[in-house]
Length: 596
Image (cartoon, rainbow, N blue to C red):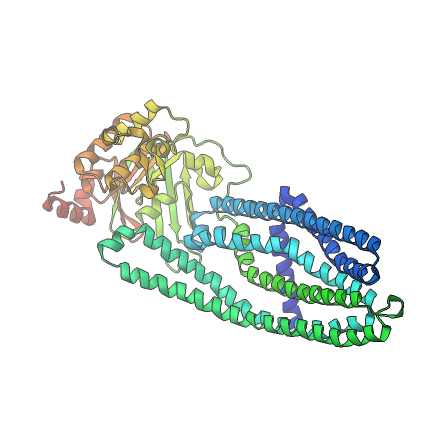
């Protein structure tokens, strides 16, 4: 069982690594050159102790200036070569590492753009941000370490050990005692920290979520004087990360004293044994070990054991990167729930909409349907009002039209064709939505409007804004249409934001226009002017208006009453006043409140 589980884990890790290796792409040459130049650096570093030994034994001790000059020149050349190889290796590794991270972020972001709403619901926004930033940064560090340190450490250890063996096999056996001790300690420590690091990265998601939520809702936080509570929440999460990191580092810190003990123990053993061998040989190279050889052995001892320490750091880094590796892999391999069919329809004939016994639930595990047996037929160019209480699935109904979600049961047709047969881009280009939660992006008003049509002229922008009753207040800004909008549209009012979003939707010149409670922040007079402009300027566009006010929909060709995820009634204003109890109650309450 254990071997099967281990084999499965290795297979999974191999799959993860192979998938991420594709992100190297155009930086493959740099990724290959980094370890190759590193091997050159290591070769020079291992050669230097040999040259130093020759310099001391055959030059200084023998007072031979010719040997001293030659060996000194070789020593300088080796040092310069080592420096050049090291600089080149660092440059190649940096280029390969940053390029790998760039491609990985690109691939992940590209995947996120293809996600459906249900895919995005699977990951929190904060988690996606963490995976694109912190996780990728960790993987970049690991990748750079792998192509440098993971090559440097074993090469140094092997070459230094071989060089030490050429000097004295007997002294070299000291390493064979120290190395197993370090390996055993490392194998015992690493599993203890893996679960801690895994927990740390999940906590980072919570930290990012807390920060994002606080900054996004800072006005609410301040208006309710909840700064202290938010600080307390942030401190608790940050404290959890601090405690976990401290716990992991305390465990890993045990590796260092063991390493130092082994290094100094080896130096003492080699000093004792080596000194006796030097004395016995009379410090003559032909008779055995010399002082120069002994000094080289000290250097090789440091190189071998420090390389083992370096390998332990690489191993720990790899363990730390397993969680980010898996988390990025989840993004890269997440399959979009909604895709265009192989032979997709490339044109929407008209704006007619037909719901045929449509039922829908957000999750396959959900017990209850959000929409139940909706049967609704809307001709092209019609204006349809949708009313209903909170939670009656009004927004859910219209989100199925541009195929933001797929129906669970039944059939939904646009232009007489099943929405699942359309190319997604074509379908969504034919449907313009002004969502209940309006979003503007940082940039000028012009840039935000051109989300609807990148090629729109200034005259088209102004015309769309006049239809949405936005031109007047935009012209009142000092910079007019070049006024900068802060992220989220925080520097304009709710009503102004809604009208800019409506103008942006109109610039698409859609066959279907969906207004999801998108005039709730404007006064009734402006609301009436917008509806009148729609009727006169875009008569061929099918318009779906979700509203809370009867006045916003009473002139519609048809009004649909939603209740509990089902169509409770439909008809004109006059018909519903006679037949629908729900509509009568809403109308009566609003008339009494002076809404009409």
